[in-house]
Image (tube, rainbow, N blue to C red):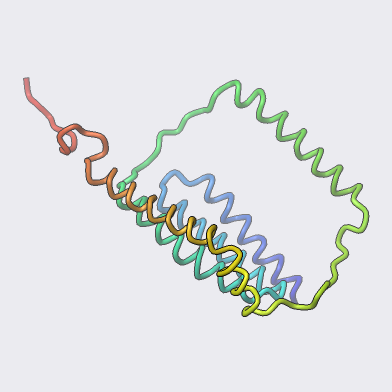
Length: 176
């Protein structure tokens, strides 16, 4: 049963990621990212990591995605132009991807003991995890929250000034 659930939600995760890349509208991309984050939470549940699953839903699928959607809607981003990309990116990018995938496949296939898992000190409780998060990792935790606040303020400042117009007006048509 776990294998079937894993395959189904891994498929949702992959489909959401591919859909995220193929969408032309930013809101649809954000919704696809929510599908990916929620699928990852289910995969964490299947692995027995309930705290990570809850944090994934609360922090990423909840708060961060609401922030992304808010910023996209505040900036009123419409359709993006389709470009064919640069020739240099195609000429260098595709061979580079093949080389990187080959290196990763070689490392995975030659690794000894791959797939062997074991518990060292037992299962960490939520209390121990929160103690580490709010004592040893308090500075990165607070810096992340300040960065998110700066991103919100930047989005509001960009939207307030009328997308780069000098006088704050949108497209002004003048008849000559």
